[in-house]
Image (cartoon, helix red, strand yellow):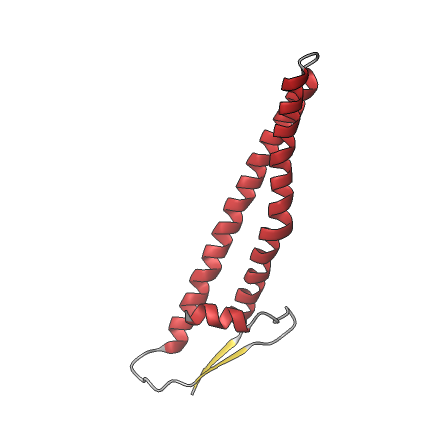
Length: 125
């Protein structure tokens, strides 16, 4: 919950900003700085893994869409099958565009924020 709070509050960080996290710790038994840094590293690693998975999904959908479009161009007189393949080809291609425009942008923004927070300074008071 703390990491989500930090990420939510750091929404307006740009690449040029220097980040400083100040922690008022009243519990001396915990090493809060290491816990936060490790949590940020784990979240960054999860985000990168998700980004790679989404890239493979986009590639797969693009190939399927292109195959269907190619098959629709090969069919001559079978109007219904040609249209079904044409529609079936465009749907995955538009899904690729949708992922690139919406999901990927949010993921990239989150990676930038996480990287800035990781490179930033954590001060324990």
